[in-house]
Length: 146
Image (cartoon, rainbow, N blue to C red; front, side, top):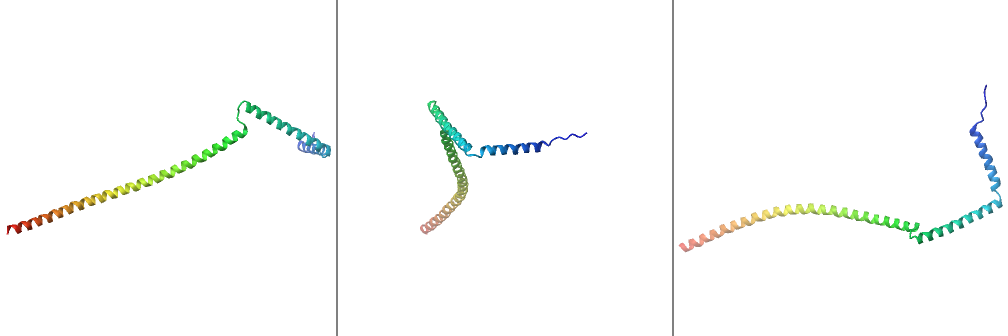
């Protein structure tokens, strides 16, 4: 015994088509359009009145409004951007300082090498000068001894 069950998908599709026809028939007239327009205008007027009432209460209780919070958010974003820029600047300055420090270390090493070289040269010059002075003294001495 086979029972035939109606297909629920087709049933609901047909139901939807019927409802769409009925909605289209009722909404596709000038009186509906005018009535709907008046209802929307009435609703918008009500929304404007409610907004004014809410803003008045927010002012009375000194609670920030949506615009105030939006301005605050903009300022926060601007401050974050400035902080990011400062952080980037500090990072670049730090890199520059490290570079300068390493160059100063190299310069210090080079200057120490030059100092050692000059100290050696000064000692050498003193030694040569002392030898030449000794030689001159001996020549003078030999002049006086003769």
